[in-house]
Length: 298
Image (cartoon, rainbow, N blue to C red):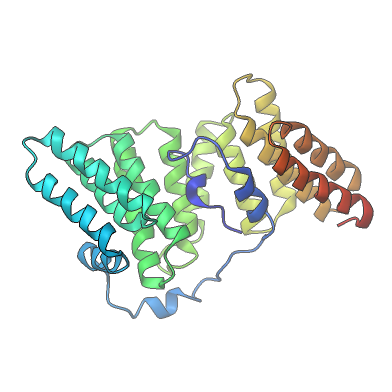
C-alpha cells in the first residue's frame, strides 16, 4: 500500500481521510524489487529539459500561452525577489494544471535562488506528489523520486534538526526503493529508526513506522505497538492533530481485524466514527464499514 506522499509532512500537516480510507485497503508493496526497475535501468537518463518538454506537450494552447507569458515576466524581473515571486506563481500554475513534475522544477528554482529548509522541502514534496500521482513511465518515476530525495537532503542540510525533513527524506527513500534496484530497501526504514531513537515520543515518526510495518511488510505484530503508541502520546498532547489520531484508530481497527480480534477492531472503528462527527460523508462510510464487519466479520 502506498500513501500519497501528500502524506509527506511539509505539504500537508494533516492526512485527508479519503486518501486514508482508499489506501489502507492494500497491505503489500505495489511492486517487487526489480519489476519496473530492471527495465527502466536500461533506459536513457532523463534531464530537466526533457521532463519540461513532456510537460509542455500535454498543455492546451491557452495553458501554454499563460505559462509563456509568466516566463517572459520572469525574464524581465527587475531583481531576485521579483523573480522569486514569479517563479512561485509559475510553480503553482503548473500544479493547478495537474503537472507537479514541472511544478517541482520551478519550486526547485525558487529554492536555488533563496535557499531555505522550507523552500527545499516544498520542492521535495512537489516532486514527491508527482512521483506518486502522475508518473507512469518507470524512468520518469525514478527521476522524480531522486529529485525529491535530493531536495529533502538540501532541506536537512539547512535545518538538520528538523524532524519533518528527516521523515520526508526517509519516506521518499521507502517509495523509491520500490522502483529503483540501486536504492536499498532498508534505507528509509533505517532512517526512520534513527529518528525514532532521537525522538521516541514523536507522533509522526511512530505513525510512519507503524505504516511501514503494516502496509509494506504486513507485520501486524510490529505495527500495533506503533499505532498504540501514537494514541498514548496523543493523549498527553491536547494539540495533537485529530487526523493523526484518526489514522491510528483506523489502522488499529484494520490490524485487529486481520488478527480476528473482533472486540478490539470494533472499539477502534467506533472511535473513528466518533472522531468524524464533523464530516458526515466520511462518517457514513465508516458506519457502513462497521456494519459490514459486525455482520460478516470482515
